[in-house]
Length: 428
Image (tube, rainbow, N blue to C red):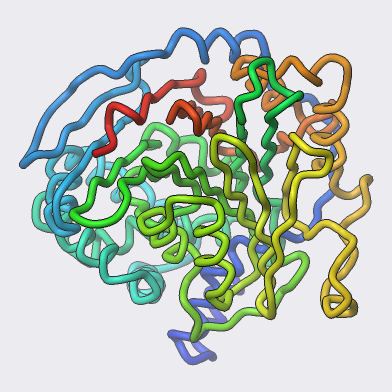
């Protein structure tokens, strides 16, 4: 099979540096046009789904860890405790069959798209080396009980990270958006945040059967939850026991630089959730670690949400404007600081990428302003980019959180109804 041009390039660069660049660039958020075609899915149906999925179904236990299914028996919810290696053993033992099945499916998919198994392992090892020691100990534990070797666990962890790059080649989708509302925007003043994780739904929808919420209760620091397909242990959407919700959007549209010698941002988010208990602590922790690549990171608690716009040369905290509403996508929002001038381009036009203006305008419309609750948020998150929302052909996973209640809702877009998880019963 003829290989993709991106794979061929691996032969001509120093492997470690190039692979890290590839892994980060997979998330590149180049602006793309929107066709305006209607996306399937009824807002009312999804709202009913959010109401009906209120409980978890106990499934199995292993060495102190517990596996549940969401109420519709759609997704796994795991709660783990102990050392990182012990939690890894619990993880592997609880869902061994699914981990092996997922590994076989995604590695075969990647190989069929032009990356051979040796190159996949090299890319996976590069990602592993950029994670912290806790994550590596977790992976070691998983390899002891899952029936997969450590190398296979690494490949599974990297699979969803690598796949979009093989699907798109040199083209890249607009990736990820978020909207947080509170105060006068909501019926009870409580903050509600919705998050779209966008890659390519066509190629990734079949893997939503493995979507899971994994709750880590480590021996030190805060307990926290990760929303990802099974075996993907890096953090892009997380929630801790102190009510901090964090989600990450790629920001390379605003700053395309990459520094392979800096700490991986997805590992930094795991550390922030484990070590930080307030927005201020999280902002200080994340902002003062130089970024390997540009990201836009939303941090919410029960009362407010802020956006950490984090280019590779600086960071700033963007507050809500107006109060009670914060919207983020893949570009920094003007006006920029004086010393950013000339280093950060203007955002894409509305015609190129309407998601930011869509979400802002829809939230301020008579239909939504002051009426937000979880069901109304599900309606907004069902709107496509041609009808006042942010959904497009890349939307794969959606998450809603209410930090005050430690409540979480998840769905694979166009795969399931919303499934509810009460994290207060799983932390600690």
